[in-house]
Length: 127
Image 1: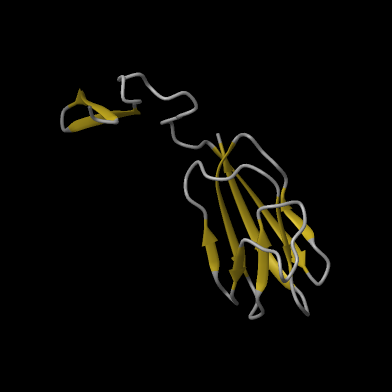
Image 2 (image 1 turned 45 degrees about the vertical axis):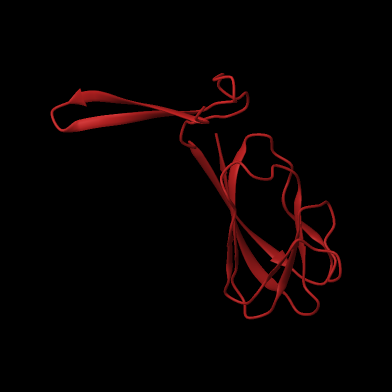
């Protein structure tokens, strides 16, 4: 049994749409799967220094997160309430971007630097 179902719809001359669903082995659509496109994006700039700071609060409506380090120094990103330079999820290098996968993590995200400070651009995409 396929875990995906798709159907093609004719919307007009040379216009088609594909409807996709994620299915369990019995053919039922999985709960929690939302095939719609995100509708809202929130933009923020957060100054990250040697004290842990929250980049994004926990948000059940989050579909994706994009985090860009605007400086040359390393920023340590944690999928947790507090980041440290020794306990982190991602080490984001200078002028680098973390482009989170769709429907991944919806909890709190924090960041810290070992020294200095960085402007970190955060885009949170929600339903």
